[in-house]
Length: 422
Image 1 (cartoon, rainbow, N blue to C red):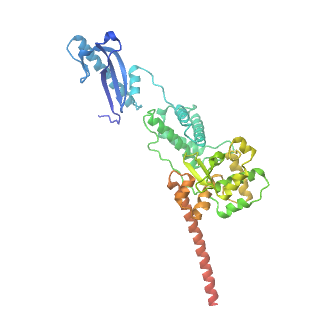
Image 2: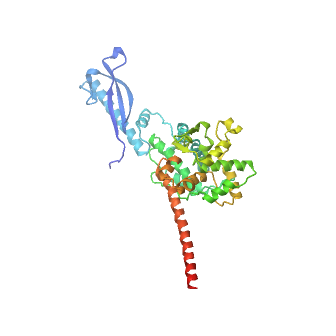
Image 3: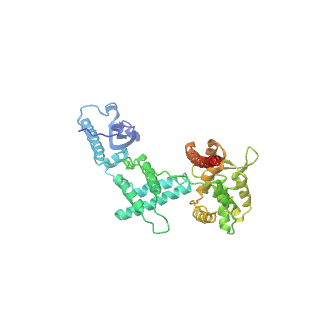
């Protein structure tokens, strides 16, 4: 039976000039192991006279007893290395030149674990990922620890033990997990987000050859498409005109309206600095910054309502102290206060800060005839396909409005006919 494998594997014997001057005529011999283009060498702790070595045949020439013993030794080494390769193959372990070398030398390889992978991922990407994204990875890590403790009493597992069942068991755990605090149970998309992060970390392990098989190979993430909430022009106006006597609600209203007329996400608003406000090519003030989520550059001309809010806080002591345009507030508090604001304004939609960005894309720009290419640039999208989601929403709104108009016109026409017959 021929064993099928996608690995390219080979063993070569090579010699190198001796570093010791007195042994210049003797060459140290090495076994070179190659797996998938990567090579490692093992010193065989033996030498051969330079005149006896045949590079093309990877052995010594001659029929002397010492030459025969030398060549037999090389044959034994090759057989042992081949045996190490087959052992790794049969035990379904990851096959690398280092793994074969460790097995040949009797070195116990260090087990790669899930916790080690997560730590490595977070450490190496902490300066690349946005702070909020990294925070989400830590949340996924905590869920994994709870799941593992519930499953086996330990908070760690070897990467070689990850399989399809582990993923489906973790999915089931997330779907049935009941939080002990005020948080809601995870939605389908919330569950999928945690599995998506786990898959990204496992992909890193596969690329680094820490794991032989991808346990996600046959698993498919199943996100549910959700409609993007946004405020209509009437709802936006209701928030803008509402008289508020509570300072904290007045402040979150200002931040929300600023985002509705600039399209900035929470993190980009709260991290906005005075130096990000500059004179644009038209002589007017522009926001020039980078999206925290994607590092995409964005340049946004300041609309009058956004500009008036900006000026309101330019001398605010808390803003000046933090060297930011606006006083700091957590996203959690901000969204909590927005729910209060929605109640006061009789808005039944689940008002969150991100709805302001959706409102900018739909009600403020696309609905008012701003081309989708321009909106895409203003939002800092990496692909116009992302922006087209909003265009579809606008089309559905137009469709809905036109149906209502058609019904109204039909009713008027019916009334006119009845009146003429009467």
